[in-house]
Amino acid sequence: MKFTKDHEWLRVEGDLVVVGITEHAATQLGDVVFVELPEPETMVAEGDEVCVIESVKAASDILAPVDGEIVSVNTKLVDAPALVNEDPTGAAWFFKMRLDDLSVLDQFMDEDEYQDLIG
Amino acid sequence: MADLDEGLKRLGLHDLHVELGGKMVPFAGYEMPVQYPAGVMKEHLHTRSAAGLFDVSHMGQVILRPKAGMEALKLAFEGLMPVDVLGLAEGRQRYGLLTNDRGGILDDLMFTNRGDHLYVVVNAACKAEDIAHMTAMMPGVSVEPVTDRALLALQGPGAEAALEAILPGVAAMWFMDHRVLGEVWVSRSGYTGEDGFELSLPMAGAEGFARRLLAQPGVAPIGLGARDSLRLEAGLCLYGHDIDTTTSPVEASLTWAIQKSRRMDGARAGGFPGAERILQELATGPERRRVGLAPDGRAPMREGVELFAADGTPVGHVTSGGFGPSVNAPIAMGYVASHFAATGTALEGEVRGKRLPVTVCDLPFQPTTYKR
Image (cartoon, rainbow over all chains, first blue to last red; front, side, top):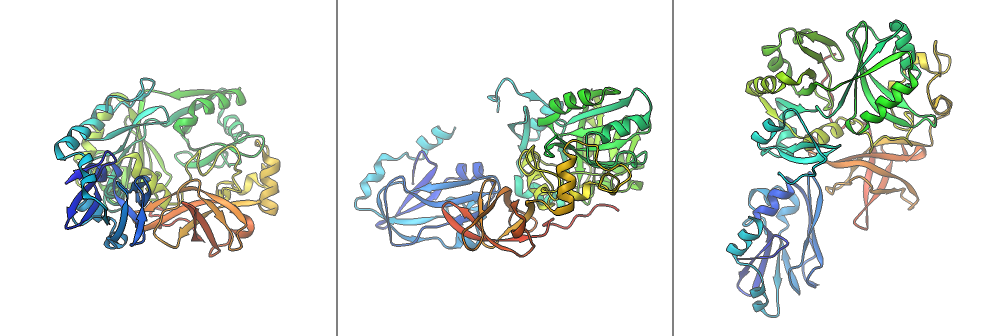
């Protein structure tokens, strides 16, 4: 699993990358009450705001970590936004992307580096 | 947690908040616990199902002492508010509003008749200005800030039993009653819509008292985050957001706080700052009104969201909004032009560039459970 400085995790699954937010991010956000997901089959560029997360405290965005195509989204989060707090790195994935070249993921942090960042 | 601005004041119970895992944030010049490890949602729901303990010692406590008799004091205070002070019986508390010459609201407050003086609780962010205002406007009154007492609130259906166990006598009080029990000044009121109490007590004994309360079954510490969602569900105004120096009490839908005696044809009609505008609005209706707003979807509409009529005409904006844990839906309140203020009016709120449906609704969102 790889991690971005924006507190997203990236997990390779076959030829796709699954994206979610870290446990640290979920804790900082507080209880999530609303999730807005992008349309599947959308081309996105790195830094695009692709999801909205609203917690009891505030609204925040999930940015596309890299260029690529969003191929599927986790619609379960729309009905059960609390999943983001319950299982942020598992059941509460947000979307899956197809990239031209998976090696772009090498630029991101591994778990130890991420732990150092939030430590 | 140690990196907050140096100018911030610390609460008397600061160490207890930290020990309980409170996340301390700056608020109105104080380091305040915004939440404890349970989090805003659980703290909110806990308060509605059991009992929540809040430290609100940042608020301003003030004694108004007459220099020439209680009646003169009450009438002087009536000169600052469109509220019946004279008619408030001893041992009773009432909601009040300090107004300015333009009929706007300088602050909202609670005041209590304690026989030979009035006890007033004002908002933290306004307290210095309130004290200066009251001192300047009431020369016949001694305005005495109370700085050596903590203020705690115990709210929720379990509050009565928990407090009665350590402060016998409170169970006999009704909503808006006030009693002095030993060193503790007890009011049966609060800011959550729940039955409960506010407790003023000497700072020296406050931590021990709070610990005894927390040891009672069902009592948990609650932070500012849940305090805000609880008051929003209860339809209660937050000063500086839902009411301020530009909003009149009539626009703010606080006409219930203006007793008959201070209205046109009342025994002591007018005679408060901004009376001309306020009495006029009472007679003919204000141009805009504070209303409840229920977003039709799940997306919260927060403070600042612009509101539009179905044809795209701008009609107002949201002043408080978020998610209501007990009603399990997004909730908001805000000001809309009076023509669009009727319950059931369909409007749109602009969230992240999209116009989303929202319906004007009655307040509160959550029924109150005051002991009347």
